[in-house]
Length: 89
Image 1 (cartoon, rainbow, N blue to C red):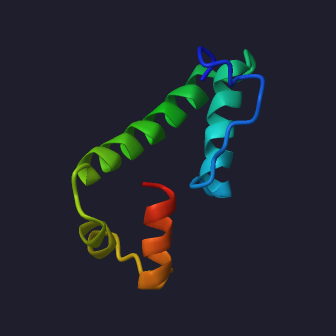
Image 2: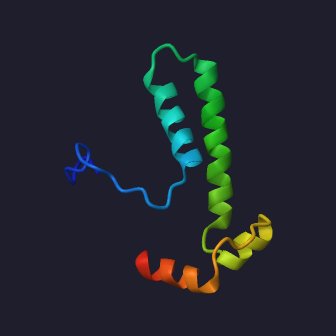
């Protein structure tokens, strides 16, 4: 983003919920402050490593597989999902 000259402007994040964005912000704050202990940084890095393993396990899986595996109920109707897929193809 920096190379594309977007760092000074607005970065659209339409598919990132507030909870996820808060965790990213926490990570960046913990790692940018000299006051954060090495232990706190290590624990947070371990958390992210676990998330990465989960994401890797989901790679190339269908939406249906992810929903079934993680017990996620549909929050949109089929028509709404189709519209979202068109918008973010």
